[in-house]
Amino acid sequence: MSLNQPISDFKNKNIWLIGASSGIGAACAKWFFSQGANLVLSARRTEPLEALAKGVNNPAYIVPIDVCDQQSIAQASKEVLTHLKRIDLLLFVSGIYEPVQANTLNYLTAKKMVDTNLLGPISVLEQLLPTFLAQQSGHIAIVGSVAGYSGLPKSLVYGPTKAAILNFAESLYMDLSPQGIGVHVICPGFVSTPATAINDFKMPALISADEAAKCIGQGLINGDFEIHFPKRFSRFLKFLRILPYPIYFWLIKTFIKI
Image 1 (cartoon, one colour):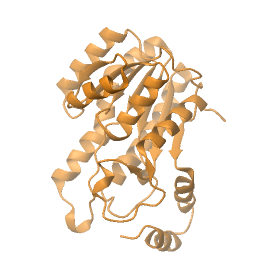
Image 2 (spheres, one colour):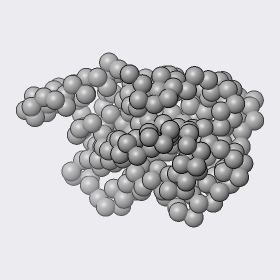
Image 3 (cartoon, one colour):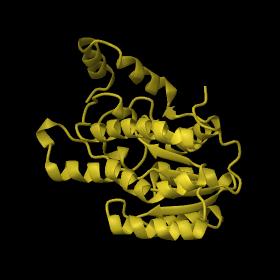
Image 4 (cartoon, one colour):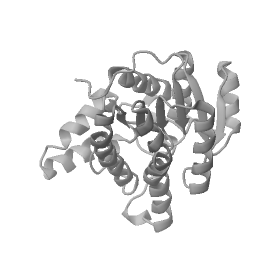
């Protein structure tokens, strides 16, 4: 059952993609380029964005943004809205991951992840929601993670930021769906990116960034609220959530060895 209006065709759709410099964001940019979308690419560093646009030989508008800086967000939003006039899809991919356990927990690392992964999309939407509400249309998609479903090893801070994104997206959907605005939360499993390259354990069901981009695109086409993948891993984690804690902890320790 589709909870959002499906996006049947991305040709000439106006998309602002935040976090397009590497990993899933860069792969999504390539995928949307291949579908004929009009893209605004944003990240803190513009050099990778320029190289990306040249590599696919498609025109793209590049706007730098620091999602932890309110002034940068306000300036970037103003520039994007001046350039696009309307937004068909906001795709927020920016995020950081650092493995944290009880013996490495510290405030500065936690604050950096909270500022980027949670307050970043909230701050961007503060600027853009008036435009979406005036349009009475469009889609908002935010990357969360299966780490937000429940506690996972080395995810003492990252997991809670993504759990908050899930809750935020659910509330946002209830507010915006009656206004004709689609809301999507994207929950990847392990994806081969510079962020996950620092993991020192075997990552179950690891997929490429290109595969992740295709899953995201298909989920938007389907009108899914939650776009989770790869299904063989994300469904397993969803199942674990309903189990008693003794079984849950045993299975996590068994299948995700650290």
